[in-house]
Amino acid sequence: MQKRQDIDIETRQYYHQANLVYISTIAADIILIPIIFFTGSMVSFFGNLIGMLIALVAVYLNKKKYYGLSALLFIGVITALGVLQVLLFGLTSGFMYYFFNMSVLIVYTKWRPSLKFIGVLIEIILFGVTFIYAIYNAPFYPLELGWIIFFHSINFVLNITGVANSAYYYIRIAQDAQKTLSLLATTDYLTGVNNRVAFDQFMQKRKDTFNHNKRPFGLLMIDVDFFKRINDTYGHGCGDDILKGIASQLKQERGNQDFIARYGGEEFVYVIDAFDQQVVLEVAERLRTKIEQYAFSYQGQTINMTISIGGVFVTSNRTTEYEWILAADEHLYEAKAEGRNKVIIKTF
Image 1 (cartoon, rainbow, N blue to C red):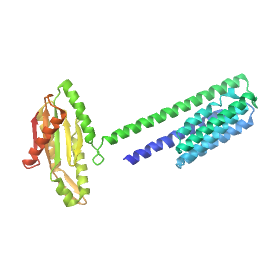
Image 2 (spheres, helix red, strand yellow; image 1 turned 90 degrees about the horizontal axis):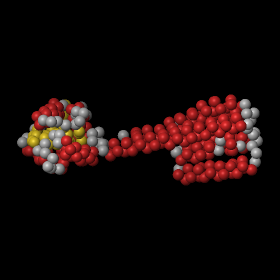
Image 3 (cartoon, rainbow, N blue to C red; image 1 turned 180 degrees about the vertical axis):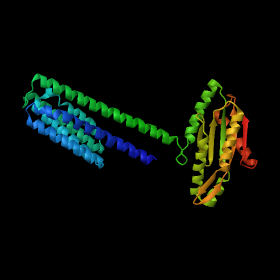
Image 4 (cartoon, rainbow, N blue to C red; image 1 turned 60 degrees about the vertical axis):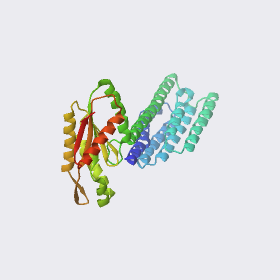
């Protein structure tokens, strides 16, 4: 699960986002190249045409997962075009903005940190040299005011939009990655239900909510009967399959407000949002019956299992969540002592 998610994040960061930049550049070039033709600068015209072709190559390399190489080609050619366009049309044309945009893209590439540092340093040096040269030397193709306003405006909009889009995209990736890490930290890796950490957090919130609204609820402690015998007889692989099957059956019963977690080993906890103890008892009995009647299969063998359930119907807030859990656990041991495959629920 973790590996799949890592691949997904990598794909989003180095494939989808990079392709968005490359394809956006191609689309902009399709519009700008004919316009540049009318400036009379064939050097700029063919330079941008080559840049568009390189962007197409970058898309192809990205598809082949050569993320670093595609970024190197794209950033290199756009930087070179930035230098060229400033020399051709002057500082007022707005092509200096591309140095800032490329510096941001370098930070987001799949390069080693040292290479990113070198890349940004090269952008700074090229910016400085080009800027100083353009100050003291007239452009090769001086533009009329209308062309200056047009190019400066379009370059400003394209680069600011590009930087903002990249920043927004990577913030979204980081947020999604954070959500994934939070989910992994609170999910039991074997059964897919909540783990002990998630349960502890849930019970702390449930205690605060209960203190506020005094709304009763049920807490069940569920233990798989003779689970050690299964591991000893069929092996731990079978035991794992049994736990996954039981978790799946428990999840089928879960209501919108109910909560299920693996407490540890072969124990599960089930929190029921109910106003009546009888409802809690009925849910617990349904769970017990469901597992008793379910035929587990392992390597062609059918295995029947049972569970014991101890629980409390919480109506008093004069105790802590740990005391609720302890009381439910005590009732679980009562159920096991009375022969297992049994439900014992008491008001607390």
